[in-house]
Length: 203
Image 1 (cartoon, one colour):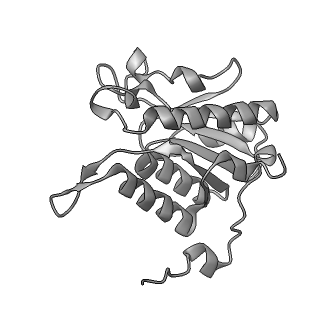
Image 2: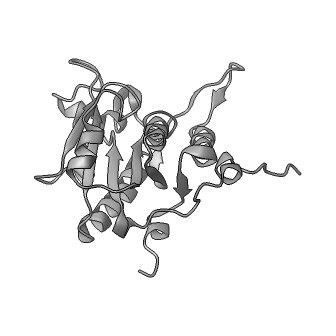
């Protein structure tokens, strides 16, 4: 039986306590219709959206800041934010006053207004991240947040990804890629919790 190595967070002495939702800013990443239908549809999209909607409702009930991120891939494609396919899905749609940040690469901080938006909201170091896809925009936004001095916590049940071709010519199942991506985040870039309940102690 293989024994797990210590994480880089542990070796570096970083804080492995998850953020409390009552003291964090919620960042929802690419919850677009892109991932519910068509070529980019994710196997767990609907279940993940349900979890994200619960997370969003909890943050709003606590009066916490919420930031939505969308990926703009340009007109005519699955990431066209001017069309319904690229719109934020109804279960987690922004309320008036909740900022929407547009990006064009996986890292939500790269060449976007995200950092300035967080400053304007008075966000502290604690960020709670959720979104599509775990191995891509969630992972790279967590990395971007970490390098800027934030403490990201990722809610696993509110993330999802898709099966992809593996380097051996086979298929990497979505659940395997999901686990690998979350493990990569937890190794250094942030804390990963299974569900919303880990962010709301005592509730």
